[in-house]
Image 1 (cartoon, helix red, strand yellow):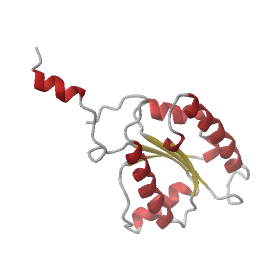
Image 2 (cartoon, one colour):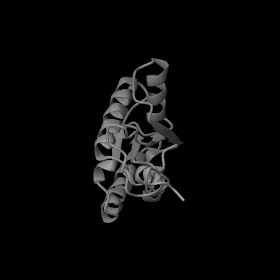
Image 3 (cartoon, one colour):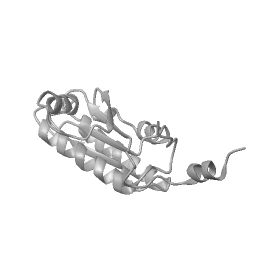
Image 4 (cartoon, helix red, strand yellow):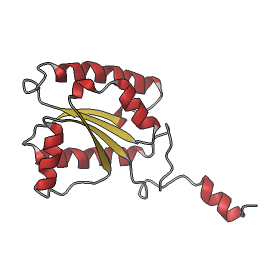
Length: 155
């Protein structure tokens, strides 16, 4: 039988200052992923609390991908692609905007804060922008706290 102290520890909510968010970043292969790589190669200081999933195009990221990431324990999800006019698939980033609007509506319907999802444009040459963006997004999610959706057990 668990002790009273053990039961108290299990029911305590994590404090915001102790909370380390899990972030998933869906990054376009041609621009954003290369921008993230540029940040790493140039050893730019940025928060490491994210996992990158490389996609061929930001327009390929459906609301289902984002919701699944949240359900599996992500506290925030970033979708990042090429700037308008630079998409290797001509209109992929326009498609990403359409998909992201659907995603935001679904997130809102689920009762989650829309700030848990974000759409940004980062080119291959924008390593400093990637680093700044990740620092800002991690801070934003830290302020929101753990996602009420999905598995938030921290290992």
